[in-house]
Figure 1: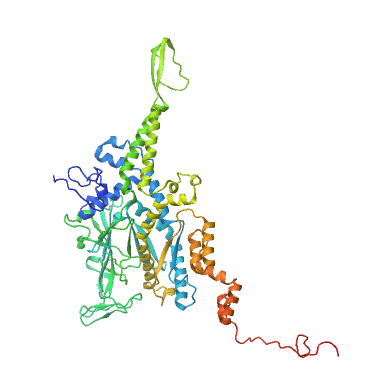
Figure 2: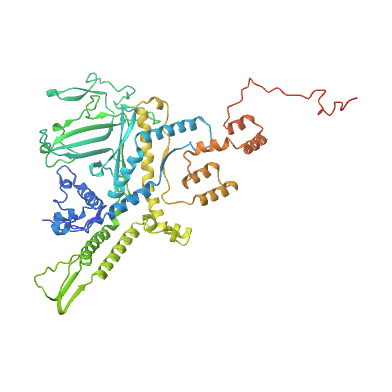
Length: 603
């Protein structure tokens, strides 16, 4: 038995729980977290997987059931009324805001260059893709995992049948990156999980592992029958002169280069996909997820028959995105769950709820003290309609536990308020305080200050990740040779979150109108501010076109300033004038009474 170690790491905030950090060894309880101690799980991932289990138990109202593994049946007598799940839902909603918009750089400028037209086409295609892929729902899935567990993972792939990239959310407990020294963008990523035994189908317990790995480009391969009739990947062409993938080129040293459409320079790197399964009984004790016995693996095959054993995906990036809930610490990869700072408060809250539930039983059915009962054989059970006959001098007293119950309920509310304060969730944001009772709008804004800082920090941790997600989607469209994306380049795009607090639309309108009238902001900035303030503006560029198409006063001013009729027509969104239809000037005739040189009146 080893000595207890004092551990400070990304999950040290859970060390207060004996089931997570054993009082003797400091390790998680093996009976409570058997999956974290599987032979194929790397030792450095044990505490992470155990932490995910603890957090999931709080979210699902099963913390008492988990504690029962170590502390016995009494630990399960614990009231859990869903406070952790309510906090997680509230934070998730605040981070996402009331809407999510995809904005491509160059689409909100008053410009008509070719690049802007392409950017607008890219934005329209990305919006269509997001609708087809139900991106809003995928984000809801991922963000709830990020807030509740500290991490979430997106996995992207090109779907030939759908002719578009598909995105899926993966539980972070299945995610095993091989981290380099910087720990940010791993070049080798595993997704692994155990498959339970299926006795009806005669299948033994198995381990499935999907691996994405960056490596040097190799010659072209094809799926062909191997030894024993099993499919295998083999090189095309002669062994001394193998064939290359069309478009690849080899240099004098034998290195293979590939020009990707989204890069300016050729690259020697590509991404390989492997999907294999092992019987658990075939795994060796010293093998972990990164060095399993490949000679005992059974490789999966794609729908088109391609064997998923080092399949070249023809991309130079790993199509996997890790989404941390918080800004990771220096040289860290993992995020921190939102409930991390309040788990002890939640334990006290559950204990107070349990005590209040027990006290309410004695308040609803009080304890009686009876003396001088005439009939000693009568039932002393308190229930409606029961009459107790007392002799002279007899008495009946009631033990009043209502004050104790009231104190317990006050303690419950105090603990809930403390948890909300530590989470930076004001009562107004939780819906437990009437905003109408705030003395002023400024006081309401001040009360939302902690929430503003929380959401700003969490969105900062996500901004670059969603930029990468949209960049990967564009690259997969190009790599999949979608006809609409031929010749396009990858455009910078952002995913903009909407407002998470009620806004004063009239106040925003007045502020924007004053600044725009004073020429302190542009029309684009004004419309963007209105959209962020809750006004129903879906596309700023489209809204600008609609406004300018009716802005005849500004068009007249433009004509006076430039004398350019084509610029005026373009400003109003009108088609260019037909040069073949030249207006015929109307000159005054000799009989025109308006001509000053003509004779006026009869002679």
